[in-house]
Image 1: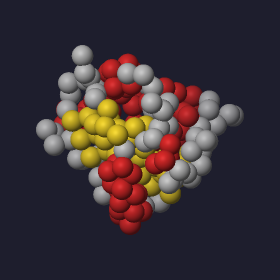
Image 2 (image 1 turned 90 degrees about the vertical axis):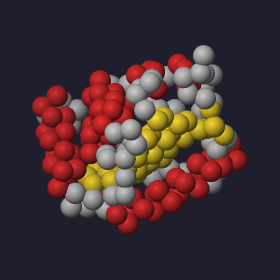
Image 3 (image 1 turned 135 degrees about the horizontal axis):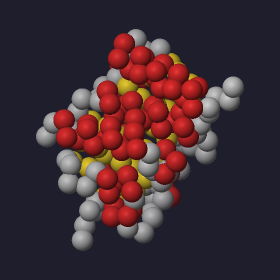
Image 4 (image 1 turned 90 degrees about the horizontal axis):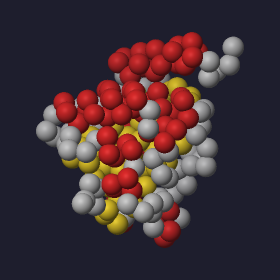
Length: 179
């Protein structure tokens, strides 16, 4: 059976959810856009206060899936302190207004967007999502969807949060939802 067969994806989703709720720090590998989407959906579902995303372009094959959007919306509605910060690498015209993921989050809470220019992109070769202080998904090669994810690994998440903050400070802010 293909790893992308619906029943295999359901099994993968159950495994990711189990790891997220147990927060043991066990690593799970994900190798496809479908897997990435399941992990990111679960990162939003298990986040308490902050989700930081470093992505090339918020790939629609990952971020524009109903479960990801549903969990991102739930996360933002759960608390007035919930924050999503996003760094993208592609300066897509009007990304803050036009991207379906961002449009789906309109008016629900704090969503901030920045763009990494060429000089910043040269400083790192990865993409990742880090939530709160102990969960993450890390792509060591940003040209491929293959990654590892970990729930309950404070040291790894803390390191990624530090890297993210450094990159965030160097990027150019883009208005989200401007008219």
